Amino acid sequence: MRRTIHLIVNDRPTSVEAEETAVLLDVLRSDLGLHGARFGCGLGQCGACAVLVDGAVSAACAVEIGAVEGKTVLTAEGLGTEESPHPLQTAFLELQAGQCGYCLTGILIGAKALLDVNPDPSRAEIAQALAWHLCRCGVHNRILEAVALAARRMRESARQEGVAA
Image 1 (cartoon, rainbow, N blue to C red):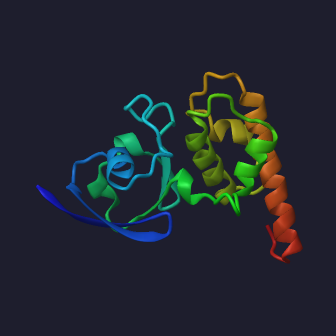
Image 2 (cartoon, rainbow, N blue to C red):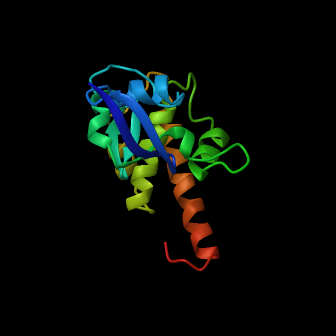
């Protein structure tokens, strides 16, 4: 049975008519027009569909919309804008940390989740946080470098604002 599901998507209160068992990825893409999260494996194992649900990385292909009612969902579209990109987006562009780009939105979400809880991760911690994201382009080193660069810039920015990072 279809019903109205209420949630917050990219900082906006959102309501959607859907079956409670509809897959979050399908609702984001088809009903809300948010195409950042991508279909990869459909089993929650590749990271292409990664979103944050109440700050935790989730595979949108493996989550029912009813399970996120009342929760906050962040997709890649909510990271930044063209005018004000997130530091991760800037670092990935600068270091060309991607080739085809299919997996990058999920990787950006995974990296954001890491930096939200660990503003000064080691290379090993970055690699571990992104381990479930499958990328076939062979740019893993640039991805790790881009996350480290964004982390450094975010810490510097916080220090300049007088906030302890």
